[in-house]
Amino acid sequence: MIAIVGGGAAGWSAAEALRELGYDGELRLFGAEAAAPYERPALSKQFLADPAFEHPPALDVRPAPEPEVALELDTAVVAIDPRERTIRTSAGRILHYERLLLATGAACRRLRIPGSELAGIHYLRDVDDARALREELGPGRRIAIVGGGVIGLEVAASALARGCEVTVVEAGPQVMGRIAPLELATAIERLHRARGVAIRTSTRPLGLEAAGSRVGGVALDDGEVVPADAVIVGIGVEPRTELAVGAGLAVGDGVLVDERFRSSDERIFAAGDVACVLHAQQRRHVRSEQWRVAQEQGRRAAAAMLGAGEPYRDAPWMWSDQHDAHIQMSGFGFDGAQLVCRGDLAAREGIAYLGLRDGRLVAVCGMSLGTGIARTVRSAGMLIEQETPVDVEALRDPGRDFRRLARELLERRGGA
Amino acid sequence: MPHWIAACAVDDVDPEDVVPFHHEGVDYAIYRSPDGDFFATAGHCTHERTLLCDGLVMDHIIECPKHNGRFDYRTGQAHGAPAIVDLQIFPVNVEDGTVYLDVGAASVG
Image 1 (cartoon, rainbow over the protein chains, first blue to last red):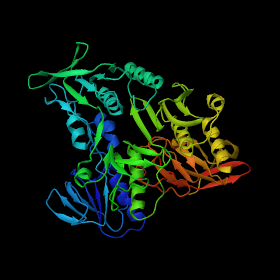
Image 2 (spheres, rainbow over the protein chains, first blue to last red):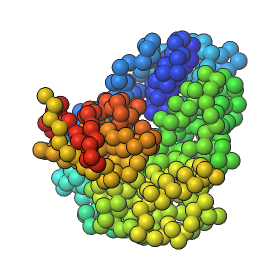
Image 3 (spheres, each protein chain N blue to C red):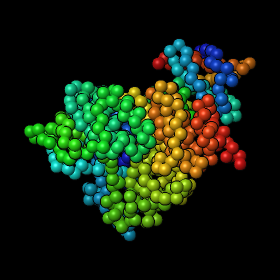
């Protein structure tokens, strides 16, 4: 039996890929949630903004993989015994595995300040969280969001669409600090303010104040209190490594796996948010928290479990929807990179920031109203993956179409 | 019934690229493969109805600009979540430098 532990993007795509690649043995997917695998990205977006949105789209709606994947829902795996090659489920069953994929994802980092246990404080990870949070939204409701990252800002936009009064509190000097360079973050902040979201950066919450039995406000380190009928906390996630630790696997910032997703136990693999993957291009362990990355890693890990597959060297890619803007990012961050800006937000193709190091692209992040940014970010992502030498002056030239430029560079590289 | 209409000029589309085409309230996407062959599909992604013309063509794949759902634009086949439902495809014919599209099978919407 191949056991997949976790029913998110990585787990489900691994199950599909195992069947596509011809594995026809016993295949069980264990999901701690009651719901069958579904698209999590919608939870902070349409699902919150639209009360009529019944359930996030299911992942298992294509012609079902053959033979059937046994979905064990509402069933957590509580222990792995790598020597006996068995798992124990929350229902107390012991099952033997040949190969096992850890796809347990990540859990929300909890706020640990006075008042954090009050009612009306929400985290967002699964559909139950999103349902509870959705109940809090409505015209005139005062919503405070702790954390100005992707989740915080998407929830801000969704809450605003529901008529809420929204304030975002971010401890760092800029929003989306892990993803966007300051210049783009400033543009994103400007967009939120123009749409009606209040944003406070470089401000830390010291405590949550009560109003009756519920939360009533967020006390900030500058002495001010942001009144709030509900608080949403989006301050990052921690990989769910408890099972791996219990099984004695090597764990760092996630389950440490090699370029083919194999852990320190040769029969156990990991993919998605929980996995810290030795990246063949970066030559270091990289943990990602992006949905499409999790899917791709699930597929790759499936191939690796069957003894196939290439070393992992993809550039991470993600998108975010905030108000009427579409944001995309690819690559490995802007730290120490030379910045090149292309376009502007008013243009169809939007505004993109390219980060260069040693004459090669390492990161791209951009925003457009509509989906015009996609070509630039995806083309740049290929240049990043291929480590293609680029000419800064050509990148800066507004007269050159970026897609064509990228293709020329990639072809020159391929022909060389 | 076949209903052929002129969609664009051959030179309007780079090899390995896509352009939008709009006809009687329906959006289409016209593709030129790396080998120079032309193809056409419905204009919107089957996942969240994003227009595909902002997407990237790679070999015989169109990638949705919003969530990177991938389809084979020759067959319409969806390549996995978030692209789960296949794209509708339309016959294409090239004559004298013009790309013609058979919209006879287009469903309104």
